Image (cartoon, rainbow, N blue to C red; front, side, top):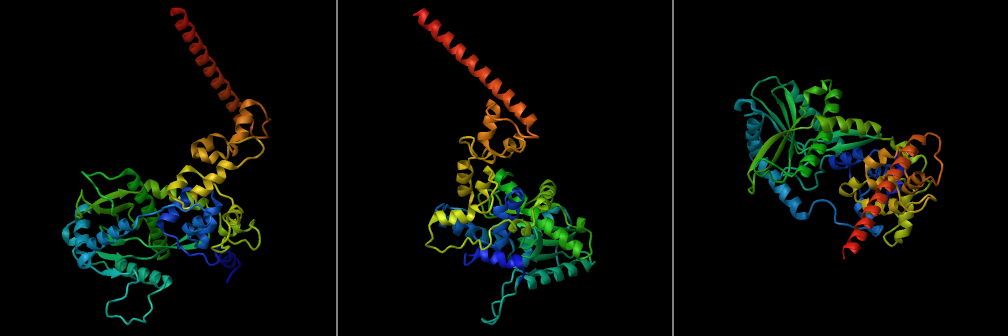
Length: 404
């Protein structure tokens, strides 16, 4: 076991593990500057348990009802060897029925047959990756028309900041009109042809991670990455029924953003290097929340408001960021105000210091002259507006008194 693996094991200790999935990769890519999330995801730590030990336990993720409903809907879509899914593919992709009517249906999710021996082991991740690649090779090398291979729960590897993540799309439809299509099955409804924009955006970000992983797999198999379509087949319940409907989701924008952000992620080795030797987040279930907080605080975070919808530790990190002071009075870190304002401040992370620069209470450091000038001008305009409002208010009160 390498040094990196040893340190990650020490950080995790006996905490429950949670492997990378499309949601976690998309969330990590959305905030590539957060070393805390990068380390914890690389170590496979279940952050829900850690948040509880910090005294910040919150309801996070899908409800049990939504999970059960999602599994039931997915089983409905894939019933009878994917017959219903083939009909949806025919409708949404606009290809002749014979183009999707037949072909292999490969179950790659690691499920054992009903008549399998009880002591038979389920396939491991690397075995499932190998089975996925074999199924892809069979589909790519089979040039017979009228065949559409459907891969049920394939497993795709993806390098994330120097560690290997394993991603499991709901399904893939192979070589329809010469392209591979990722299929995402979601349980949120499409009502009158429209869906919740937030849920739709989340699905697009997750699908972009799957498409990126599939493109990398294609390159490793010696095929051009553009054989993978950037039009993802999204399957959802129609209106208020359980009837499946499909639509194409263009994820080119999300794919470009995800690729760029993942490229910006620091390698795990670099994230671990400055951490104290012997650091562990597993201090036992009876450990005081402050002791756990001190351990977590040893890894720097980059909180932004978007973390509230993507990270289990968001409430802890927000409280930490708001309380952070650097000798310039209260205010906290600029990230609490959002990425747009943090970007406008030009690298000044402390809100209190930004306010002091605006008031002229402190001198700008080298390279901060321009943002200091902008802040002082903004402060002057603010005071001018407030003085004008106060003068108008005073004049109004004086007029009212005179009239009475």
